[in-house]
Image (cartoon, rainbow over the protein chains, first blue to last red):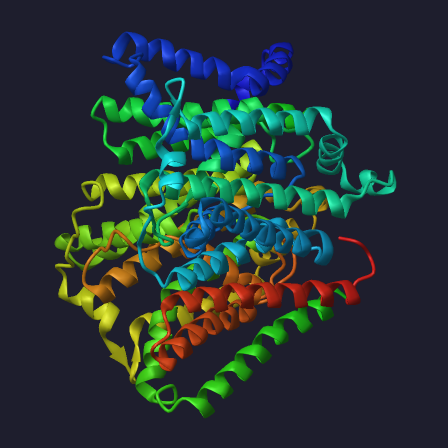
Amino acid sequence: MTAATVEKPKRLTVHWGRWLPAYGVYVALAALVLVNAVITDNFLAWENLRIQLVQVAPVVIVALGMAVVIGTEGVDLSVGAVMALAAAVVPIYLGYGAVPAVAMALLGGVVVGLVNGGLIAGVGLQPIVATLALLVAGRGIALVISDGKLKEIRNADLVAFGNGELLGLPYSVWLAGALTVLVALLVRKTVFGRQLVAVGGNRPAAQLAGLPVRRVLIGVYVLSAVLASIAGVLAVARIQSSDASQVGQLYELSAITAVVVGGTPLTGGKVRVLGTVAGALLMQLVVATLIKHDLRSSIAEMVQAVIIVAAVYAARERGTR
Amino acid sequence: MKLSVEGVQKHGALAVLALVTLVGLLAFPGFRTVDNAGTLLVNAAPLGLIALGMTFVILTGGIDLSVGSVFVLGGVVAAWASQYGFVAALVVPLLVGAAVGLVNGVLVARTNMAPFIVTLATLLGARGLMRAVSTEGSTTYLVESQPFKTLGNGDLLGVKWPVWIAAVLFVAGSVVLNRTGFGQAVYAVGGNTDAARLMGVPVAATQIRVYALSGLLAGFAGALNAARLGSGVTVLGIGTELDAIAAVVIGGTLLTGGAGALSGTIAGVLLLGVIQNLINQVGDVPTAYQQVVSGAFLAVVVVAQTSLTRLRSVAPV
């Protein structure tokens, strides 16, 4: 059935194949917003949009790092565990104030990123295996550090960071926006950005061209882990408690989904930063829409599965060309 | 040459298993009881079945992330179906698992999408399905069929049925892998897909079959687990796919496909089981340490394997 429909309009397929992965996610997002504006009560109300943005902010932050990693033809399964690790570290150093605590959490991210990058670039492990080891061990370490207990966060600065607002938008949303701009600039305007795309596009060629492949790979995994740590700190600050067994659970899947739906190919060599943000928003709004219309979350999960397959199927045309 | 690399990797996992077991036997009186050995084996059986299917998938160069969800789904539908008798409780989860696997296989083989992302989607889909049939995970179906419960808890010659079943399926799997055309096709597709296609190996059919097999075995593992627990527990299974992948990789099967063996997978599954058991023996250790040790083990084994492979094979992979 699919073979017949794909065969016939050959020229059109090529055209769509180029266009769909790049802009499909924006069209889908716009369509979803339009449909919702008509069928969902209070969808465009500021209060609703604000909630959606707050919920999507940590996913966006983690997905930014994931997009960069996937751009090098890698994947980082450890991001959820890194969030848990950051969440576990924060309460320990909170006695010294919010800034040292956050700094230590980010430092933990740097260490995990170095281990990931070292295993991948130095030892030559496949990214999926190396980061899988960190996924398993990372949450374990987080649970060991936190003694498996939920800890309440009472530090005023940190709570303000998680719940405060600027011009009507929570800090977390501003932070996600600022990080998006930074990562977009990093990918498009810096030497590092060029290099990481080159490494993802053709690693042997990048090596032969004299690019510092190992350093680029290590840098990419450190970036991903640091962004995940930021998301972990944000989660702790927002809910005002730290539970290493819950924070970041299954975030690796949400992040990969956002990246892939946003049109970044899993084969590397291309990073769509804004597409990733749109992908995260799309998945968030899809779930929110379904739940608003009293469809159960289990149905929402199945719909997400279909969207992922559809997005990758659309992106695939480009890859095979 | 490829065979010798494979041999080293296979025996490496077995050697580590022997070493860890020996340490356990010497250090922990509680570890060297027959009861404990039985518990260890029966706990390892479901993961063994899942890892068996995963080995086939990984040998073709693919990966199946959906097995954890299918495992739970299998358990829930088995418990639900047990009200219609033993046969239903056994057949329904097998059909459901095979159906999910078939979707994976067709999408991977026919649309050229990455297995990683296809099975990630079906992970979500199968979990959604599981929660849809269990009222968002809040309904726990009890196993109604007594013979089905016996399948999970009864024993033959002192060894529980799930262990027998896993053992028999591993032997059957080895025969299929080493003595049949399908088994050779699995290795050929994983070794070099393009070459396999040019040689006339049915690449798509082989891929569809391994994913269907993986789904089928994950469903079966879920059914056996439900039979043993007496209910379709909905909160299990998060990360089971990762345990299975870890077991396969520790067992020396290369994630790039084409090289590996089921004997290594058994060693990998048992190694994870023994580690867990030993940590329980130590007693007052939080389960979190178990994750730390398992993760560290995975890293050490894979690093060792990669170094070995590099030493042995000059050609870059």
